[in-house]
Length: 346
Ligand code: AMP
Ligand code: MG
Image (cartoon, rainbow, N blue to C red; front, side):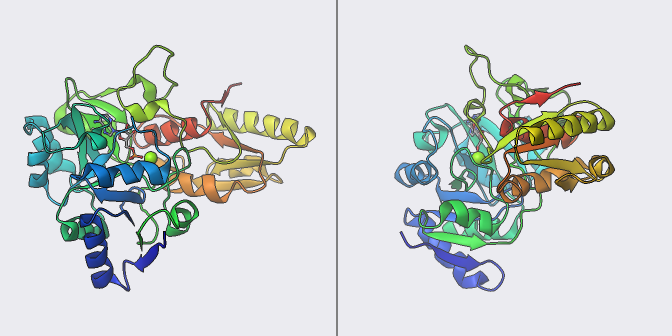
């Protein structure tokens, strides 16, 4: 398949109109959002949605998120709109918050992987909104990476995985949040199935207590069922080993320096994912500064790019763990999954 590439700034009008037509006629379009790039198809057309799973190599039991251009567009997709959803939509839409609730008859089983719930989000990115409007239908979209790889946050990363597999790619530059949306289930007690840019603290400030699903920071047990099917798969994996050092910044840096030396003796090539606060511990070692520990959103924004761009010729990434508060929960969720839950302690 020949993939057309459009620039969201310089080819705005033509690109969006054409991409909207491609979605409506059952094709695939990669588009930028504020979280990561999405791989979209007509969310009301089961056959079109199946092409997403094929292009990504995604297991068919992992459901997708429907993207809408205005709050009221959620109405026909759910059985009804619960009060908590209204409050959350007013507080956080458009933005990186996905809400899961009971689906209506309109939503094809391909989107929800046969579940009786559907996930819906209104993105904030102007190009994403313009595309959904041009398509005139909700757009079903997972992240635009091959299944298992880190989600793409730049068009270069999209092209690595999707060139030749989709009809259109819209280049919108870098994604600002850098990790996928927070997924919150409103079936029963509000529960975070996947942490993201809208934090637990922000949600609790608006609707009161919010639970966090067990599988967010640990692997699923053998006989445990995933609240969110996506959590049972290996995710965000670069082409090298990753290990996460836990503890205070000083303790984590100590572990990392020890493991770095050990690995070098074994002939392995290592790289450290450091922070502004700890870079001085790693003088003379190969290291990249991911962001600022006191501003975990900066770490989220840079992680997936680093997992793709900083791993060439590297056998082992040694990364610092951070506290799981605020955006730190989303960062640790992605980092631990990229590491296959390999952690190092003192
Ligand atoms: P991605 O599309 O790559 O952002 O993945 C979508 C995420 O949303 C996956 O982790 C899915 O498991 C999750 N998800 C989508 N729909 C549902 C649903 N109905 N119930 C629970 N989780 C869902
Ligand atoms: Mg994904």
